[in-house]
Length: 164
Length: 164
DNA sequence: GTCTATAGAACGATAGAC
DNA sequence: GTCTATCGTTCTATAGAC
Image (tube, rainbow over the protein chains, first blue to last red):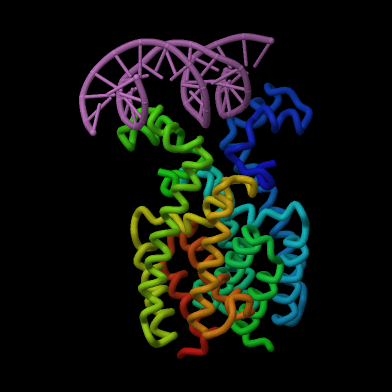
């Protein structure tokens, strides 16, 4: 619900109804909505890290990048696609929220992956360019509902990695 | 307020207090909050179009691009910077909202500008890549509060336009 | 009189928290 | 289930402009 409909428009009542639990059960496990949002992002990050770990096993850098963007294209073609859950959440939560720390951790992990692809350090300008490719692809594809933007971003990313 | 704090967390009461008008005055001029959001984006789009029109007068394509990203970098270094108002709004409003049409119009206008820069049609893959550069720069710079991502996006964009 | 502005109460619905 | 607070919205009542 947080991903599909947005965080602020998704009320606690809708969450517990969807989960089929009592309201007290939620507040026994989470201090409040802020912590619930952080937990949602943490779970999303975990799945994302799993994907990156899989891709890390692919030997060739160009192939790693291709698989990465193939996965993005796959998710973007889904009817439930709604862009990057972390970039979206960043729009709705304050920097003081516990969710923000998870968002920053996501970007660190993404930078680490890209650094591994181009075999450099995370502070390399090439890594920043690849992050721009990812974020731009997800953001634009979300609004325009056009998966071809992922393809465009991939072509761009291939230039950075210098893989034809 | 919609830009800085977000649309959903900014209540009608805060808006009228900030504007110094009565509640009835707001509802005399707007059918409701949805229309107010659309009007906010319309005003933002107008200012953005003014900028693009200025840049269109610059003769050299490479210089047009440089000025465009220089303006992005300038706004990103502002303490009030909060990313792209249209991409942000897209996270908070539904596709059925009157605001969504303004957001789509923004992307059309942006594509038109980029098409003019590379002297091609708006459906050219190069235009899509430039949109990815813009969206990625704004989104990533917002979360990480790192203006150097704009610079990275610009370097990327220069490759597309094939300007050193 | 008509129009538009004002301040503010009150509406039902829903929010998050307990 | 219940609490309080706030949401977006509507309504009452009034004041000044043309």
